[in-house]
Image 1 (spheres, rainbow, N blue to C red):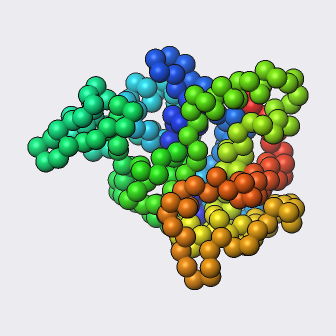
Image 2 (cartoon, rainbow, N blue to C red):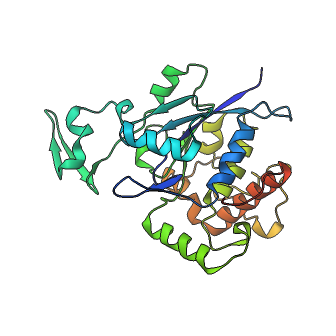
Length: 281
């Protein structure tokens, strides 16, 4: 039986940008390429030693909003293991509806809001209780919020928030040229980098240990065996041997140009090997 990796996907701000009205969903660059990779990775691998990816959606949005985004991203039918929404966060009724108020008081404490929303946490223990064949060794949460992963920071792959500013930049870049999207270096390349990271994690026996020891940042020793990455993209280890990087540094890996470039190149190499075109159609 093949090993399995649980990939927990956030939606708004991670894979897409939902308009304020909720009527429109804008794709992050290379989303379709990323989904084609996940389609392959969630099937039995042709190469032994690679984990099969189980896909779960967990969004802090309300059920009707999550349903709309899931249909827009994955289509009417998908291979998702589960779809979790705001009802799975364990919020009180006050917290659940907190967006209506600047501040919400419960019987025990005051909930501060940011941008009109209560700050929630995704406790992966709830997922592991629902799917006991998974654990911290096999789970990775892809989310743009470090706060939501605060209980299990070493199971979190943080990405930059895909927001209105990035969407406008994406739209401008696409309108400025008629060249294949794959050659538009000005586009956000986060999801290409995530492909490189996920392919590496499929070969690991313990995901939380891999992240804890700083392998995400230590690109000199994290190169996938089949990734053709130039020596120019390799740097000295980000942490001293035997030490753990700070959680905040791990959550901002994408802010380091060399690290981002390394994983993007690794992702492109994986996609090329799998005959997946790098496009945004």
